[in-house]
Length: 519
Ligand code: ME8
Image 1 (tube, rainbow, N blue to C red):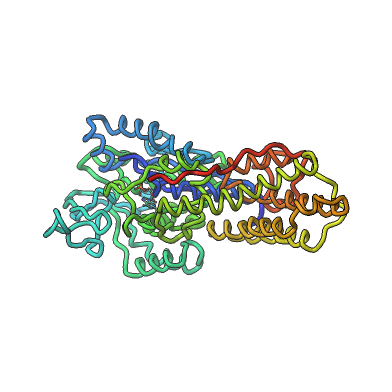
Image 2: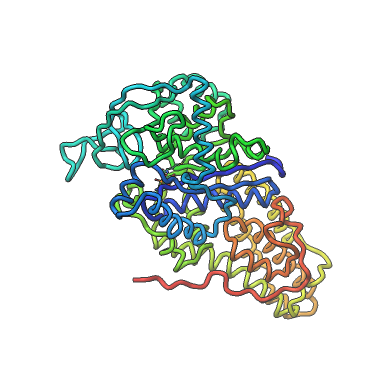
């Protein structure tokens, strides 16, 4: 993708039935890293996140707390979900709530358009519904219950019994889109990523699609069907539309056309909604499907998905309070192969924090800057000539800039970080081998000392640029200490090596102070 392109990125919008855990934070951070990187590439980037506030799940949480669903949603958004964005240092451009008027009006417009085009009909319906998933469950996703639910049928994801619902509903003719979807997957092999997710979706669609119930009459917490206010719109139909309502679907100011199509980061449990139902809804409305649907894996606890309902969720602040926001962002992006499941452990976080952030990167930066102070009074020296070892560092800085950028194009965030870390490791080795403290002992090697420290400083600047999307706070401090010119977030990725210094280095506080291991 060339610089200057439009890059519209979304996260799932989160249910406000409860507070966030690190599984939710994971997708937010990943999307933020991608958005920041694309901004630094010079792409016309728009990053959307938000909350999903209708449906039975929220209705029941509110009832259990003796407040109205809107009061409940307002409280959770203000006290839990918006603060999460601060905790994670997210750079989202917009935050949509499905109770926003802008959303509700446009959802109704979209549904009316589908109705006018003949894609909606009314029918009787009876099926098992999982409130946890907010989804009717096909037989293949129902399993035998265990423990307190022994002898009952339960949802395979939530391990809880479902409810038999029988209503007159409006339906969306999803089955009409079986072949168009298969054709679309075929023509756009990168539409669903990673490959395993694509395979799953293709075989699901091949096995046949049923029409989708898109309205409910047994409760009224939702957006009304515009032509029949006895019905509210099914929460998923409403929620998926956030991706287009937030950028002005149906308006004529050009914003929608400028941003769409989106790249969606979603959890693998909600892949089918995004890769089957959503593109079919768009096709029915005559809108191009999204550019990409990328399914992330799960954070596991004891081999199972970390979840609120199973009480295994760790609140993100428990980690950021101890290790800081940057370390949180780095750890999850580095330790888990993006697109696969991963487990979180305090030991692993502690070990990587010290080995990679404190010793690998932080220490490198403070040593180099301290040596510029010690040997050159903080003035970056003039370089007479570079030798082969210096050139190797600069060549590596250039090549990892390109390979990390290519990895980000594939959303391979962990690989991009691994590319950048080659430079961290190479610089550490370079300092060990060049031994500037030995070069400093004689006037005869003063030119070599100048070249070595200048090369190391150049490398640190490249690290600041490339790691900024992942470690925004630490790299800002480093950028300032390097005496670099201009704002770091305006430094283009492609020109990472061409950053300029005012010539004077400043003080660098410890970027990643040691954290004692708790009992
Ligand atoms: O599904 N590991 O909302 P949600 C990784 N409102 N990701 C996890 C996770 C874990 N342990 N637990 C949850 C919804 N997630 C809908 C989305 S989009 C139009 C509507 C992820 O709050 C989960 O996979 O239940 C999903 O992508 C996201 O958190 C929101 O989950």
